[in-house]
Length: 245
Image 1 (cartoon, rainbow, N blue to C red):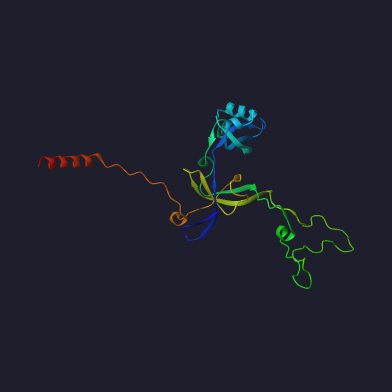
Image 2: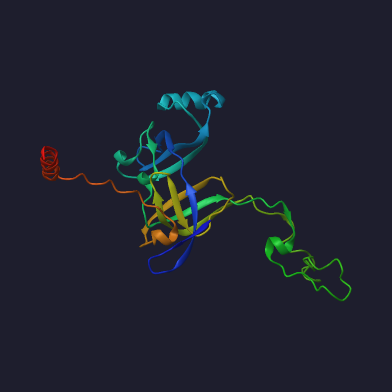
């Protein structure tokens, strides 16, 4: 995570995510009367010789000569079959995302092992005085008295924390670098460094204007325009006259 600044001087928290080329391995229509398609996308670097034979054959059938680390099935709804990417094509960032898109980001949270009630559910704990030397971080009473005389279902107890799928909704694409295939997403996203994310477009957009200098973003250098041929001829004539003199 890092921070970026808008042209209005507002600081926003962003997460920098790098997108690897998404290789379309297969595209299937769910049914003839349905406009839904399932696209199998492979991403991540892996040696082809270490890939399992069934997947290796599927990659070769689609026209790829490299292996993939992970394969995901993505459901796409479209009434026009021409807009569905065919097997053997590669999707870049600019083919799917654009500046200002509102997205939902789904990922797997960090695994935190066995955690107590205070860390897992935010319980305040017991008093640190009055002789309770070992009850400061305990969850306290969990029963409900004589009626119903049992622990109710869903009570927050110590246990395994994290390592679950979480979706963060309503984030915005604030910057896209087509050279490094990097995407800046507003706000935090689940998971640790190098973990996989699934970015889902909502069909909505927001106006985003970043201050590139303050945010540390280097824009591509524009090519220097060539001088006009007339000016070049004039310089050549002057040089020839000076040489004669």
